[in-house]
Length: 190
Length: 107
Image (cartoon, rainbow over all chains, first blue to last red; front, side, top):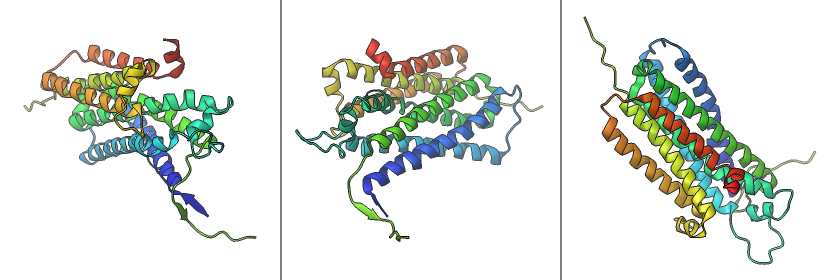
């Protein structure tokens, strides 16, 4: 059983940072919705407040880690130019997708959208975390700010969801491959 | 009798509007890069990542600059939050539309 270094990085980016961010985002949305829709939110205990601030900060780190590894580690492998007359495009995912009418849409719509929309997630969640950390329990006095934080967190979730969906599908049709091979274990024939 | 001090909303409003401005800057830069070869090549800050490196780096700088200026102006004030948040959400909505490839192709 083996895996290439590029696949490991794709896993770290997608399953590690991206999927974990989506999970964390769904939890934050529930909490923020509860807090926002209440006309007189209960004052959180210092422990609850500390937890929410830490949770939001962790989301910020996950979101930035996901877009930065995506743009600066994986994307260069994805968009690598194939030498002229290369017949086997398996090491050039973008060219591989563009070589067939059945898969070109995964690049022209999927990657073209994903590579930009994904960045709305860290920008939005950084703002949301800043407001939560800056205002703390005082946020219960600012209904409009709470509403805006909830809206931007929702957009962040949708943006990360779009990026995650297209990332998974693109990696299914044209996986990023290559690099050192890591031996994970030896399978046994049955 | 104790009085509770409530933080003014300016700092939060500044962060929210700056996020809208940053997102919109990213969408406009991506759109401009898609429509103009000259803009596209000028946005290549890091060759392996291509124009995406310039689009995102420039947008982040615009976002942080806008945030800094707005925080400096509004940080200790109470502002018309509803209007500011509406503008921020409109910018965010336009950003989502401007990054959607079928809409970019129509414009």
